Length: 408
Image (tube, rainbow, N blue to C red; front, side, top):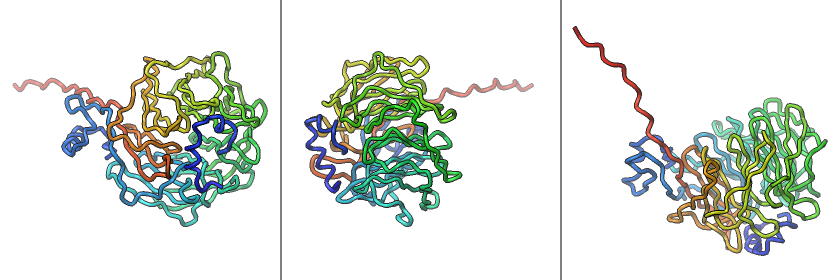
């Protein structure tokens, strides 16, 4: 059923279809390392200021995982782990990419979960947890991968949420919360998984948002915010909710001045606001909004110099900017933009050396660069990627030195 899903994406020029169908790091902190990279012809930095510049470099193609889209990726603090997805068939393989050495290491398949796509994954600080997805039918199984030992541990299914895919998940610091998605119908249920006790607790449905899929979700540090998506009637929505796991309670997000209804959009958390952007309603849009949960208010994002409209793209938060990249409009895209919420302004991402146009790919932020990998092009799934450097890495201020005591 999903053996050629990436090809289906080429037919999404009519975005009404999306509304109704289911569907190295040069860590950039050491001037010496940066200088070496510049000598190799990879000028990640302006050596005069030690600032990261608008630059793309390819990820290694040696020992790379099999081509795929609709997979997941997490950042461990030193490696990007990609897993699952859809190639010529569903996959239960993956790889660990080390940006310092620009190298790939395969993940073990021993005791790995069954092949799947459109699942979710979170990083706990020591393990990657994958859950749900589809192997042709919705799944409510998952697994925990420990990169230190290259081993998989199964997850309890007792009291687990019902089987689903195209749902969302967040990591709270102690639990994974999954919510929404598509089972045999759209869902407004979820569950909290504690890896220490290997147990599930259901999320309340009292005051929960209406059932939906292709929505976005962020974790604020105390709440999970879900917004947008497509409901069970094939309609895009601009409603949402805030879930507090401490009280197991929901609170709706304001709809006053909220962005237009949409699905297949992206969202990031800045530390004080959720920024949503792009998506379809049912045609692709290039608008967005910033939601402040303290005041329960929305502010529109600038439309000046904004990237072209798109769906099934990705977004990361750098600490100062949201970077959106790739996706699909009438064509597959390898363009993007950097949005600064302080100045409410957009800056285009460089096209020189940018990866091949794609959708249904993954991106992670390493604290110094965005790594893009996999996805689907107009003809096939991809096993290529790129690293985009955009974060300023300033020289540290000189440490004050004590005045030497004069010798007698």
